[in-house]
Image (cartoon, rainbow, N blue to C red; front, side, top):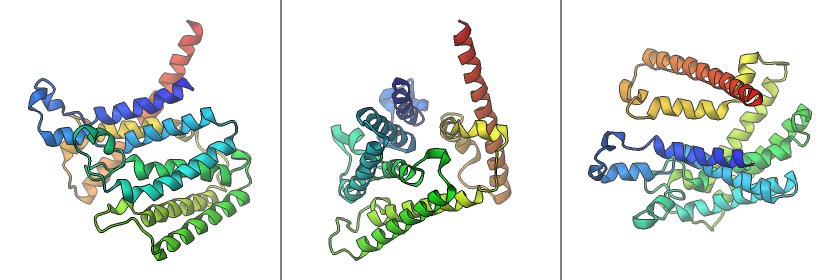
Length: 278
């Protein structure tokens, strides 16, 4: 349990470290205010880290998996409802670092409200669509995913027709409940389709199975390579590339990230063996 909580904290710290203005590390007092604003934004790693902490907290407090799934679904619904309200809050002053977690107004791309909804809802959907885990028959998963998709789509239309709404003309598009429900429905339908596509596949190659267990490392690694200062790829190649250039950079990133993931997996095996023999 402690290790899983530490993983959430690590993600939050890495999210901030990626945005530290290293060019000013020896003259911190001269850092422009706009770079301080960038540092305090809540982006994808902080959002994932906070959501992991929430889910781990639910796991510790709950007595059964069903209770975790129900709590995750209720929190998801609450975040969807609160999103247009908290998005109106403009982060400033002492509360800036905290309000950046619930509002897009200071430039946060993935504030916890509403983006944690996707992980929390995914937890609940996984419990509903796979009641027997990996042993669940594909027809059960597929039919339940379609039912969830239809429910989300119907709820989206109901909200569009509702006379009651906290959405205003300045509400960020990503904080609108209709947007969130649309995306949740699209993800659910995509998972259902992948459920069918994967049916003929009996066993993935070993390297793909290894990489599938290192998705968190892969995600963090590619962000570090692309955005970390002062060696971020985004600084070296610029923001606009031709299609052949973009394809080449993407292929290199794919190979580099896969190699790093396999190396990280081997390192963990080596470290575990060393602890056993210590």
